[in-house]
Image 1 (cartoon, rainbow, N blue to C red):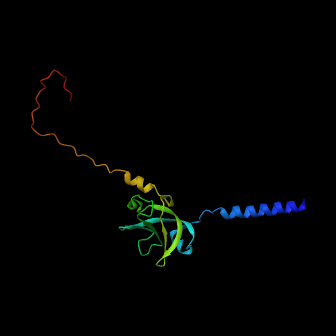
Image 2: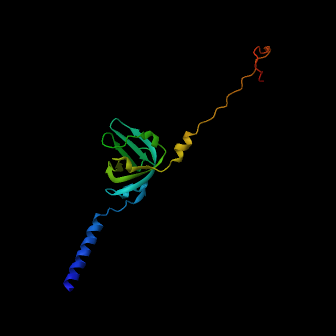
Image 3: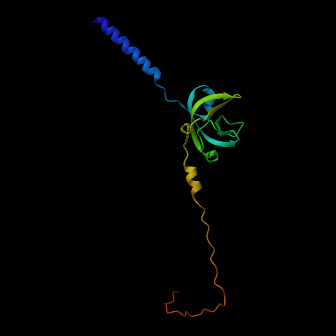
Length: 159
C-alpha cells in the first residue's frame, strides 16, 4: 500500500510539472523605452506612434520618437503580415504591440505578423477628428428697389 501511495504521489508531481511547462505565461507589459532590456522575449509594448514610414515591401511604425531616436520600431512586412489596415491612421495613436523583441542594427523591433498583435489604446483622437467644423452661411441681403408684385394665384400669400 505504501509503495502505491509513493507511485501515485510521484505521478501527481510529474503531471503537475508537465502541466506547468505547457502553460505560456502572459507577457509582461512594458513601455517602448524599456524594450532594449527584453531582447528575445515576448512582451507587450505600449507607445505612441510618432512616425509611419511606408515602403514598397515594408511599413515601419516608430514609437514615441521619429527615426532614428525611436526606442522601438514595429515592422510590417507586406505579404507576410495579415495587417491590411491603413497604417497612416495609426499616427499619433497610443498602441499596444504584442510580440518577440528582436535586435536589428542595434535597435529593438517587433515584427507584426497578425492583426491581433496590435491594439489601439487611444480612441479619443479618432472621435475628435470626426467632428466637423461648422461654417456659418452668410445671409444674402434683399435687393434694394425691387418692386414686389402681388400674387396672381388663388393661394394665400405667406410672408
